[in-house]
Length: 153
Length: 153
DNA sequence: TTGATATCATTTGCATACGAATGAATTTGC
DNA sequence: GCAAATTCATTCGTATGCAAATGATATCAA
Image (cartoon, rainbow over all chains, first blue to last red; front, side, top):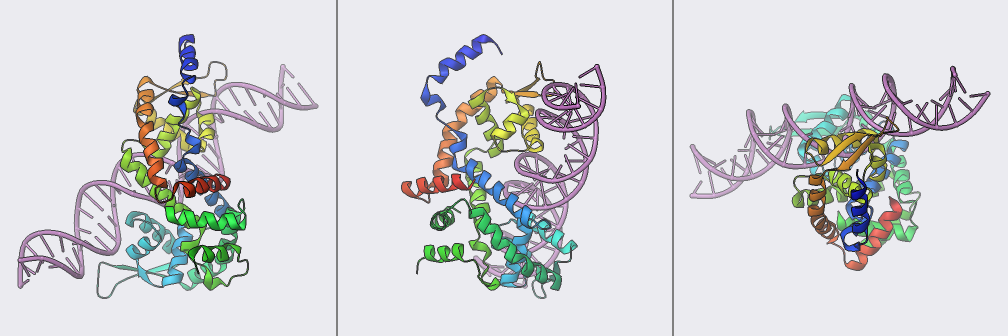
């Protein structure tokens, strides 16, 4: 790096319009950081399950047996991603798979008894995770934030 | 009763029964979906670069030559992640690497001329990405959202 | 000075995340 | 009823993202 380049940099810095794009103020960048923070809080409270794995179990608890694709739609995962998540839950005995009787393309997913126990046990921790994630905000701010975030997602 | 009231009740609730746990109302789940939507908007406008790659270039434009680790800190990536991002930018000739003269542990990263051209060309598109990501909100809502999101991240 | 500690970078392993291609099974349109 | 289009699932390739272990270098402290 030459002295000439440093001088050029100083001259350019005087032109505010060329430098008013600030990464740290862009919604995408902050969204990524907020998501990272949430995942970190999640991992600290629920060490043996990832957020996507938890989402799959929680949704299966809501809706009962469904096809792998349908479950993916419900928890916002594409087919390739949901397959990996379900494979790992199956390997741990938390879900079981079966073929749909009529439509043989469909792979049905359901909680095992162990999976149901696990999700029931983890839900109180998940509530704490939500609370801790929102802890920097007052209750009123949190409500506003959730409303706006839902509009954005 | 409005959706906002429902959210407020959930946020404030500390002793809700387990059957009230709704995945689609948890901040982590919606945060993940909002992030997914942003990445999708980004990819539609800037096809040849990922958000992390763009972040690295934009930050190098701000701060000039830095060590790989320091860059990672500035763009919220751990050492293993930033290495991969920089490797790919280097393979495409957008950044160049050199060893620090005094501290031989440090790997200095800087934009190439091509990298500087690329980031200058892409910044107007990045502004549009921010706008489109926030488009579901009014200007006032967007300002509120950004303030609260920053507190959360 | 030297031994302990800290920092920078790399590597490995695992887990999302998604586009694209493929194959199997079903539904649609004529 | 049959070809075309669609749907469900799988596989491959690429790119984050992070924990843990390792090696090289630098700094601190006795």
